Image 1 (spheres, rainbow, N blue to C red):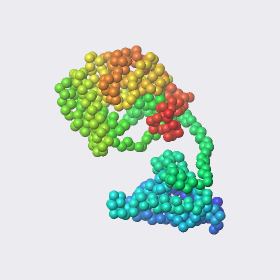
Image 2: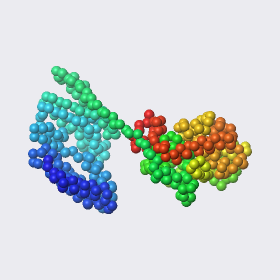
Image 3: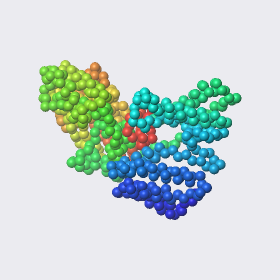
Image 4: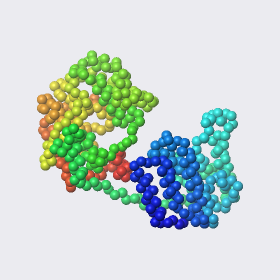
Amino acid sequence: MHVDSNESMDNEINFFSLMLHSTEPSIIMDKEHIFSLLSQFAFKEDEWILPLHHHLLQYIRQVFAILENHEKELSNENWWELFIAELGLARIPFSVADGIPVMGFLETRILDFEHVYIAPLNEGSLPSVAASKSLIPYSLRKAYHLPCMEEQDAVTAYHFYRLLQRAKHIRFYYTTNLSDQGAGEKSRYLYQLQHELLEKCPPKSVIYEQQESVVNPSVVEPIVIQKSEAILMKLKENISVEFGDAEKFVGLSASALNSYIACSLRFYFDQLASIRSDDEVEGLTAGNFGNVLHKAMELAYADQEIISRDYIASLLKQVDGIVDQAVQLAYGKPAHTGHDFLMKKVLVALVTKIFEFDLESSPIQLKGLEQKLKWALPVPGHGDVWLKGIIDRLDFHDEDLRILDYKTGRDTIKKVDTSSLLFEETDLKLNVQLLLYTLLVRKAYDKGAHPLKAGIFKLRSFEDGIDWLNEGERIKDDQLNDFQNALSLKIAELFNPNIPFVQTNDLKQCTYCDYKGLCSRQAT
């Protein structure tokens, strides 16, 4: 193999710089660059890779011809996706003088070999599970005795056994790695050889040997993000009253605070680096399920100061319509799949349970739905920091101002002796959220006028009613003051330049984390 190193290096750099940094990508120019790169490799006539290189160029031309008719309809990105996908299907047979010829079964049909190596002998690869290219349905092809998958398998089986007929030394290779393509399961041909052929025509000896490969696990370096001046300034712009822009108010929410408690690196990715998952969840699942529920309750109780028994009784006759409207508003389209219809039935059942629970407690004086609150928390040494929250429901009942939240998850409220533990344990998310909401209500809404209670509608176990903070006891000002002091210390830690953003040691937190791929973390 001979390549002019200087010329090749210049062209290679030019190729990759054009492909990666071009401001106006063009399919025509990309095709020229591909051939320009491949043409830099000059092989001698006696080199084994020369015919392989020739076949590769020929196959690429065929792929170009296939895509050429659709180039006007494709974006540059879509063209590359189709090109790479089609190129991945290439099967290029080749042989080397005094070497091992590599070929498919069709090329072996009139040849005999003493030494045969077959790989991969996995179900899905041999026999192939490639879908038929015919537009005629399988049932019609079968009924009219047209070629079907059975005939294709029979042809493959014939070539397989014919190839083994005169071979003296045979080796089969298969993978045990599971994949979506079916790899990991031995081919049926191996089982046929073992249970049929070898029993009827037993050889003098059969040797089963498992090849073991030692894989040295890669050492994953822990990710540590030091708090540079730029990062600290970004943090201050997001949550500090002094540095933040009132028109671009961000603030520190309960979810962001819980994210920092669970894993400070997750907080950095989400709140400062703005790295978020682009995957949209299809169907009424995950976040949009909860959004629909919140929207349904907002629609049901909107513009109602007093929720009376008669009003709730009328709502119980309109649950389907309310949920349909909520699905349209929160989900963006009506339920249109079987899964969506099932989830809609679940939503109807949950909304009905909430109405029935409120019916027993009515009349209820409603003070707010999806109430947005903010308050500036003094943090010693760092000025005031914006706290924010959206409270699902505020109402009066039995002289108490109740802070209520709808929850579809599995988290539970737990008994905590001291407020400092809230910021040390990772499974106290609901306690932190409800206390933060209560602090916002006390400071920015109620201002000490009424006793406060906070709880959640735990929709996975609604038969237990509302799950209350403090086991239903009123939240006293002393508890709120302790929480405020502990919260101030935690936020001061957030501003400390000597405490970097690091990965959590609790791998359970990585189970559903969007960033576990970036961290190379496997949840337990």
